[in-house]
Length: 200
Picture (cartoon, one colour):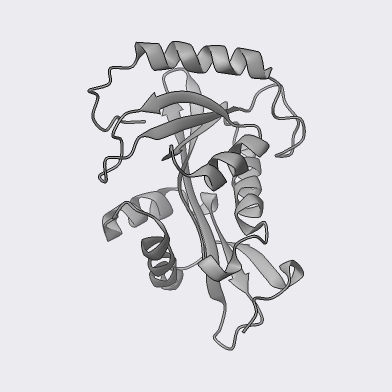
């Protein structure tokens, strides 16, 4: 069966513990890093307002979760830092901008809570994810060597929230490509290639 059209996908905030099994099943099929139920509950119980789901309203099953984003927001040094911990879209529902829509919802929610910046990590080889986030204004901040359990390097991406548009995607990428490349190169040179998994 073909997936529905984009206007048949409903985006909703997390609202019940009953939704957790569907979220876990989707993420476990999509992401390379294993998570325990305690990790999910850490995010969702503390920041339920920063978890959003995409539901297929045409499915014969009730409210099937086909996409999800899970985030948090807390203090980091002298700023409020948002963090995108997990983003997953069911394979047959990709190329429908569901991931982009979920990230925009999360960005706008974190901005409404006065986030100064938003960060995340993604695999260096995940071209699709890098393109998605960079199109929304995220910049490459740092390369994390052998960050994942499978030994793959990660890029830490960062979005600066202050001084930009109120809505995600509205002029967020204010830094020139030349300056971005310079910042990235400086961070790369300062990293120790032997560094193991780093904390955000």
